[in-house]
Amino acid sequence: MDAIISLMEWRTRRYAKRWAVILIFSFVAGLVGGFGAVVFRILIKVFHWIFFSFLLPYFSIYIGRFNLGYILLPVLGGILIAPLISRAPNIRGNGVPEVIEAFIFKEGTIAWKFAVMKTLATSVAIGSGASLGREGPIGFIGASLSSIISQIFGLHRDMKRLLTACGLAAGIAGTFNAPFAGALFALEVLYMGAFSINLVPIFIASITGNAVTLAVLGSASGIKIPSPLSYTVTELPFFFLMGVFSGVLAAFFVKLLYFVGDRFESSGFSPKLRLLIGGAAVGILGMLFPEYGVLGIGYEGMRLAMFGILPIYLLVLLIFLKATATIFSIASGYSGGIFAPSLYIGTAFGAVFGMVLRFFLPWVNPSSYALAGMAAFFSGVAQAPINQILMVAELTKDYTMLPPAMLSSVAGFLSARVLLKGSSVYTLKLERRGIKIKTGKPLILETISVGDIMTREPVFVYSSDPLFRVEKLISETGHDCFPVVDEKMGVVGIVGVRDLISCPDKSMSVEKLLQRPYAVAYPTETAQQALEKLITFNQNLLPVVESPKRNKLIGVVTKRDIYRAYYKGLEKMYIE
Image (cartoon, rainbow, N blue to C red; front, side):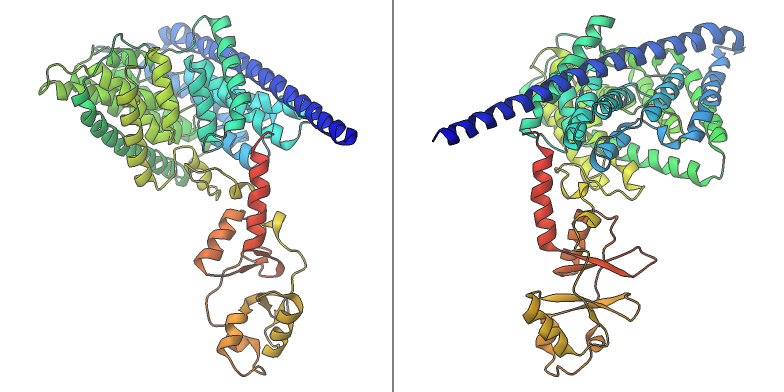
């Protein structure tokens, strides 16, 4: 009895010690994520001053009311970051796909050199006027700094993953003064859902990161919300309809972004020339309306749209200009986020929808639709509706607008999900690298490779063997099917119990039965890909070969292997 009590006490102490370590490191992740966000925002302000206050007067050449100097600023920014982009092409874009990749496939490890180059390139890009957001890069900075901390202390891979998520949450929370939304963003984007036990350290990091930003800068979010906002119950169907339209627009925006990006990639132009072309295009667009946020992050344009100051025709034009400038900024290779530009486009679209509706229903408040449109559009782009619903509550500091925001966000999420086939603006970048990730479900099998779970010394038969040898192997091993190989160990098919039942002549060679199509797996594929092949081809076993070009058998993987790996992988996703 005393031994049992001692064992229980030991387990309790061990559990308490483990959680003490988890909470301490989550707090540290929040600190470094918050300070990283502060430093990054200061860098953006410094570079913005250099480009727009110091250099612009020297470059200013006026034709009528248009200042041609605005064209040169993003071009100059592109010239400055071109060496970094050439050296590390992965620093292009917003950084969130790289956090997802590190979280799922690299045990939460992000190289510090990559983080430094990303920070510098993004600061210059946004400061020079590229139509990009700071939120995704801030989240990346928080994740990378937290990853570096976990590497310094030699933490286990499950802790590395958790701290990477904590850093991402801290960065997003500090950007918007929205700790709940920051935490849910990390859970939706990395875990593809809310893992209850992991909420605790992620919330601690998110709240800490937000507190650091507020303590140093005095404010976090650049988004201004009019107060009070209102709606009537009879308007809820219109909010839902607007959400559907926002989701369709979001899907079109994401597809166009990658379409233009593909054209740049296939153009044969050097990275530097692409940046020059993209920068010139952004500068021309921004020159037309420099005061409305087409250049840079765009919070001023969002404020004007949110407060109903701009007319419909100008809002429609700004939607086109901001979307086009953002597409050229990202597609041409600038480093920066998609978060703020998406909020800008969604806000302007929601304001337009509300103004049109007010022609028929005079009591409608377009500002309410602008806020809901902001949430709906980004929910479609990022496939993260819960994040946006909570962000609305935290930005408005009121729950009044939650019902219409929930309707719009869910509608935007679903309509975009149908058109994007379960992908998001973040996962599509990884899918183009051959990494299959779909939003909306926990990533378990996607984190496990076939090479980790396959049987490396499989039982096999030669194509020249008679069927009675297969029958003997079944009785000796208990297996119901086997890979079939030629003399050079190249896989040529699968044979099993079903084949024996259909053929009474057991002296026949195996190769005469190899008619039905079959699938093979590669060691670099994920367990999820292997399971999909097993289901599609109705197989109980997948031969594993070296590569698509080398068909040599090196192992087998079965449904049982995948099920066992799933439950082990599920345990690793929880910190317990």
